[in-house]
Length: 138
Length: 138
Length: 138
Image (cartoon, rainbow over all chains, first blue to last red):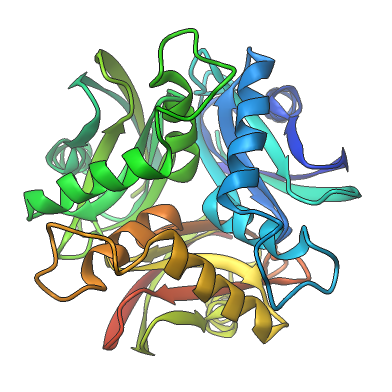
């Protein structure tokens, strides 16, 4: 049993989903670990992780609209130092995932056929986001 | 330190919570691992996992109504290939859990007295859902 | 590779965020494990865990107001045995996190600069909350 670490940097360009599935699967293969447990940790409070349908781009547009209505920028927030998208970004992070832990079998995360892994950016402006990967196995 | 894998199939019959606590606890005992870390991974984007009160059925009815209002089928979605419950199912999955990781002590997950583990089905029609179990420990 | 367990009790005083970051980091250091995987499990269905900005108290007030509107006590619930905050507490737990799993490097969880770990209390009255810590590593 051994463990491996990695850091992925994702350059984002405004609100929305950034697919990272291929980065994740390639890194798992490169470690040579066949069976184990993979953890992804997003080191931010205004971006998060999520698992969603990996095929249809209309899903991503519906997600964007739904979250804009669920956590509106037009709402009155006390904390708005960095603009109207500041506090909504924190709330969107709380409602989705800051972390994912996925079993690995035969060298691959056990994702379902339609599952893609995304970094979900919640800020309007470009950001440099860091995700820590950890894999424990043999 | 060793690891075990398992796949649970849950046949669902419309929207709602399907308790899997007993399946999970029985499998952990069968592995013979006394102390470790258990991970459950739901391989879908229109069903998810959640931990909720394990006793009162009225809780489950309130949950159903709350989520029907939070993510309504009546909302206008671009992605509706599989019907009005298609896109709401993706959004409900994002708002709940696709994965749970639970410490195991003395042969059992450390669930609280009132905690039950559920597969949360978000589609109207019957589905065959697959959950991967992973246990690492000794 | 070895594993350590711990139980943290948090005495809460009404709805809101209770920071536990220092407790978590101190315990990880005390175990002497340098690199590994840390899991926190909240043993309740009316309190949860979340990662949020660790500096500005106004963020915490905005979070409180947002969740009071998202899951209102004024809504009609079937399950209200323990008062109007009973069922909303269950729903808030489902929408946030019951568990967090964080990679540990060089003796510390890989939290980002602004990330704090919180127990999120959803009930009005004081409660005694229990969180199980599990650390696997070397």
